[in-house]
Image 1 (cartoon, one colour):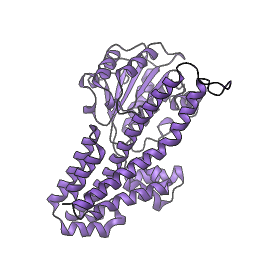
Image 2 (tube, helix red, strand yellow):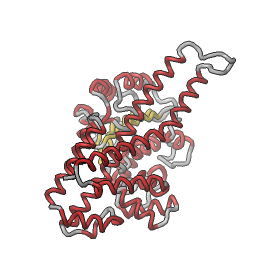
Image 3 (cartoon, helix red, strand yellow):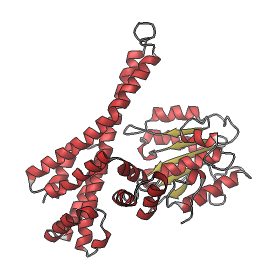
Image 4 (cartoon, one colour):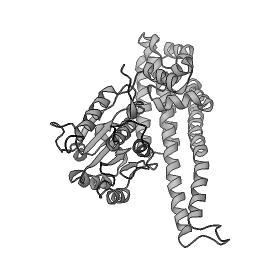
Amino acid sequence: MATLQGVYADLVGQEHVVETLMKAVLSTRTGEETPNPSIHSMTHAWVFTGPPGSGRSSAAIAFAQALVCAHDGCGKCNECKSAANGAHPDVEIIRTEGLSIKIDEVRELLTRVSWAPSMGGWRVVVMEDADRLTESAANALLKAIEEPGNRTVWLLCAPTLHDVLPTIRSRCRHLQLVTPSTEAVALVLQNKDGISPTMADFAARVSQGHIGRARYLAKNEDVRNTRNTIMKLPLTLQGISSAFVAAQTLVDLATQQATTAAELRNEKEVDDLSLAYGKGATGRGMATGGSKAIKELEKEQKTRQTRMIRDGLDAALLDIATFYRDVMMVQAGSSDALINKELEAEINAVAAKTKPQNTIKKINAIMEARTNLGHNAAPLLTVEALMCVLAR
């Protein structure tokens, strides 16, 4: 496996994507962009897709860094560093913490990126979660992509190509990232983070190639303990009553994690905004409009926390799906490829007393519940219905 350098160093297992991006950057040094990606290496709009943890956002940001770097993405210069943390004047990184990206946000963005690059290179817009664009927001973005500004590049990220409006994706060059191998992720954790081989193998295996989650698991014992609790839930399902208990446990865990993560951040944001409106500066209250601004912030924080709970539930359901995936593997006679090796005895016991077709039904039910949560179904009711299916 080739060793990736500079801004591409963290794109584990994505050598095919890195090669394309490097050629595109190289072509910009000798020629202008073109809207015809079938002939030239560079174009004004790209869409990066791939499963969670594949690094689609990381790839887009690395490309943005390379475009504004005088050394094609060294990763060390001020341009590379400022582009990565959102401080570069010509690089916009759009991250949504709400449930969707609305048209007002897109209109504001289009106003900001309508100017020519301030430092003579490219103006680059990285939009993470482009699949969260509302229909009206996507249509507003389409016009900008159809009529791009001078030396403006749009980099959109989404789980799959079908999550992007057809009229938008037809005008973008598509790059498909893949899930990196367990071995590759474990090696990165050992070499870059100093994680022990045993812990690195565990984290890489149960995260299923999601390098960010693998790193989080490897470094945080509380997260590992929470996951262990989640993985034991299928073993508690003995009937309807236990299904409701398991559902409540799962929702409580996701809510607790989201609340803990949000509390300190929310308080700091309110304090910072209050200071910006003059609170405490002269012993008087805030300037006109301060109370309204704080109410708007609190509304955004509530939306963000709702998404955090849903994201936490989604991750938990994926973990539970790996349990039934392992059961199915044992039933198929492939017990040497288990994700949850630590639960091998329990997995074997479940596999012995259930039929393969029932295991498949349970996995399908988990995927359906994830889809319903993505469509804003009530979390507790959705998980209760799922647990009733898993308890059969």
